[in-house]
Length: 103
Image 1 (cartoon, rainbow, N blue to C red):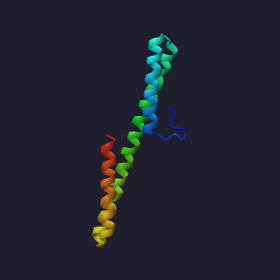
Image 2 (cartoon, helix red, strand yellow; image 1 turned 135 degrees about the vertical axis):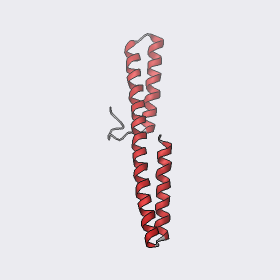
Image 3 (cartoon, rainbow, N blue to C red; image 1 turned 180 degrees about the horizontal axis):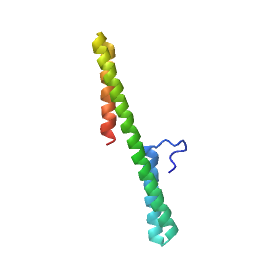
Image 4 (tube, helix red, strand yellow; image 1 turned 30 degrees about the horizontal axis):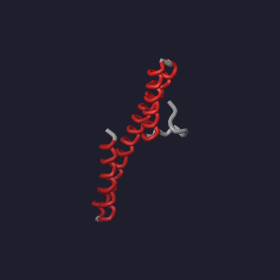
Protein backbone atom coordinates (compact mmCIF):
# COMPACT_ATOMS: atom_id res chain seq x y z
CA UNK A 1 0.00 0.00 0.00
CA UNK A 2 1.61 3.30 -0.99
CA UNK A 3 0.32 6.45 0.54
CA UNK A 4 1.43 9.97 -0.36
CA UNK A 5 5.14 9.23 -0.76
CA UNK A 6 6.11 9.39 2.90
CA UNK A 7 4.08 6.41 4.16
CA UNK A 8 1.70 8.69 6.06
CA UNK A 9 -1.93 7.91 5.26
CA UNK A 10 -3.97 10.88 4.09
CA UNK A 11 -7.76 11.16 3.82
CA UNK A 12 -7.69 13.59 0.86
CA UNK A 13 -5.17 11.45 -1.02
CA UNK A 14 -7.19 8.31 -0.29
CA UNK A 15 -10.40 9.98 -1.44
CA UNK A 16 -8.72 11.13 -4.65
CA UNK A 17 -7.53 7.60 -5.47
CA UNK A 18 -10.86 6.06 -4.52
CA UNK A 19 -12.76 8.38 -6.88
CA UNK A 20 -10.13 8.09 -9.63
CA UNK A 21 -10.21 4.31 -9.37
CA UNK A 22 -13.98 4.29 -9.66
CA UNK A 23 -13.77 6.52 -12.76
CA UNK A 24 -11.13 4.31 -14.38
CA UNK A 25 -13.18 1.19 -13.64
CA UNK A 26 -16.29 2.83 -15.13
CA UNK A 27 -14.39 3.70 -18.31
CA UNK A 28 -13.19 0.10 -18.44
CA UNK A 29 -16.77 -1.14 -18.03
CA UNK A 30 -18.01 1.14 -20.81
CA UNK A 31 -15.25 0.22 -23.24
CA UNK A 32 -14.85 -3.42 -22.25
CA UNK A 33 -11.18 -2.85 -21.38
CA UNK A 34 -10.59 -5.41 -18.66
CA UNK A 35 -7.17 -3.98 -17.78
CA UNK A 36 -8.84 -0.62 -16.99
CA UNK A 37 -11.54 -2.36 -14.99
CA UNK A 38 -8.97 -4.19 -12.88
CA UNK A 39 -6.62 -1.24 -12.38
CA UNK A 40 -9.61 0.93 -11.45
CA UNK A 41 -10.80 -1.60 -8.88
CA UNK A 42 -7.30 -1.83 -7.41
CA UNK A 43 -6.83 1.93 -7.20
CA UNK A 44 -10.27 2.33 -5.61
CA UNK A 45 -9.45 -0.35 -3.02
CA UNK A 46 -6.08 1.27 -2.25
CA UNK A 47 -7.77 4.65 -1.83
CA UNK A 48 -10.35 3.19 0.56
CA UNK A 49 -7.58 1.46 2.54
CA UNK A 50 -5.68 4.75 2.82
CA UNK A 51 -8.80 6.52 4.11
CA UNK A 52 -9.26 3.81 6.77
CA UNK A 53 -5.58 4.01 7.75
CA UNK A 54 -5.76 7.81 8.07
CA UNK A 55 -8.88 7.51 10.23
CA UNK A 56 -7.19 4.96 12.48
CA UNK A 57 -4.11 7.18 12.83
CA UNK A 58 -6.24 10.20 13.75
CA UNK A 59 -8.25 8.12 16.23
CA UNK A 60 -5.10 6.93 18.01
CA UNK A 61 -3.63 10.44 18.06
CA UNK A 62 -6.92 11.71 19.51
CA UNK A 63 -6.64 9.12 22.26
CA UNK A 64 -3.12 10.29 23.06
CA UNK A 65 -4.36 13.91 23.19
CA UNK A 66 -7.15 12.90 25.57
CA UNK A 67 -4.75 11.05 27.87
CA UNK A 68 -2.15 13.82 27.95
CA UNK A 69 -4.85 16.45 28.40
CA UNK A 70 -6.41 14.56 31.31
CA UNK A 71 -2.98 14.21 32.94
CA UNK A 72 -2.30 17.96 32.60
CA UNK A 73 -5.77 18.83 33.91
CA UNK A 74 -5.32 16.63 36.99
CA UNK A 75 -1.79 17.94 37.69
CA UNK A 76 -3.07 21.50 37.29
CA UNK A 77 -5.94 20.82 39.69
CA UNK A 78 -3.65 19.21 42.27
CA UNK A 79 -1.15 22.08 42.15
CA UNK A 80 -3.79 24.79 41.88
CA UNK A 81 -2.59 25.85 38.43
CA UNK A 82 -5.82 26.90 36.70
CA UNK A 83 -4.00 27.69 33.45
CA UNK A 84 -2.55 24.17 33.20
CA UNK A 85 -5.90 22.69 34.21
CA UNK A 86 -7.76 24.63 31.50
CA UNK A 87 -5.09 23.82 28.91
CA UNK A 88 -5.33 20.13 29.80
CA UNK A 89 -9.10 20.17 29.54
CA UNK A 90 -8.88 21.86 26.13
CA UNK A 91 -6.40 19.26 24.88
CA UNK A 92 -8.61 16.45 26.23
CA UNK A 93 -11.63 17.90 24.42
CA UNK A 94 -9.64 18.29 21.19
CA UNK A 95 -8.62 14.64 21.39
CA UNK A 96 -12.18 13.56 22.03
CA UNK A 97 -13.35 15.47 18.95
CA UNK A 98 -10.59 13.91 16.81
CA UNK A 99 -11.74 10.48 17.91
CA UNK A 100 -15.41 11.20 17.26
CA UNK A 101 -14.61 12.48 13.76
CA UNK A 102 -12.67 9.30 12.91
CA UNK A 103 -14.83 6.48 14.24
